[in-house]
Length: 294
Image 1 (cartoon, rainbow, N blue to C red):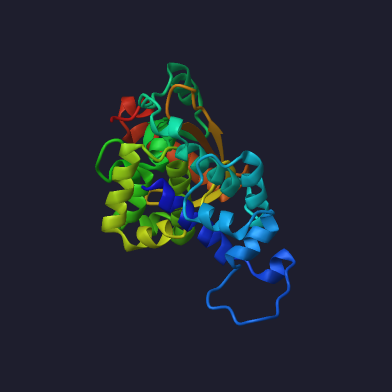
Image 2: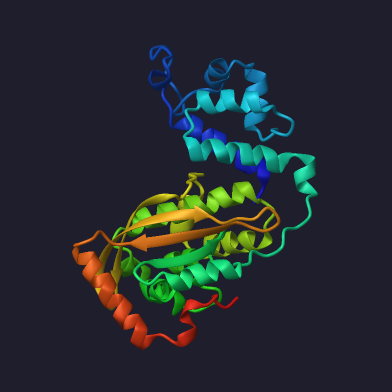
């Protein structure tokens, strides 16, 4: 993952999706050779020179002030996740970031494992930035049993989603789920572009999956906090679950996120989630709740 090319492609794709009418510019004039805004139009909106913005879009972002980045973010109508991504790209381009000491591997604190153990009616698990499942309670291991049995340690959601044919049955909205997965990985790549394990994962998926390559090229990003997700579980059938994700990251370690899935009270999904919990109690080993193997 090259920081300069990521900056170039991200800004270019954000510019291409806007029309003059969307940003309050005249819509007439000469025919456009490519879709979206021209660089000079973005420069006007951001209050900078065309030469300066052209240089920025070529990846020269080191040393750019936060005020100017804010102006560019407004001009390109970036959402919250995209704005954070732009600032992370700028941070990673600074000389100090290139020589920063390597962070230690993300580890799940014992207190988080205790918390996972205490949750019996919800599926709860902890992931790192590259979507390795590092720890899970019994119900989460049952919910993600196809991911855990797909091979490899630790279990990785992205690998399963793009490399296991069964994922298309497991996720009823496979396209939507795949979009989210790639956007989360792209966000993490902006935050930590020198992460070798993430680079290897992206390289493998790009080589083996055309679906992944196409999505990676869009440079879409996402912050995962809350929503609903659907599963077609091989044991209990369709599940529609609400989720919330909480950041557990420490300053001296890599990112960790706790995700909790629950079903709407009184729904068919609640009944099937309870059935899955019963299945988990009789079909999973005692250590299922503990930290996943690495």
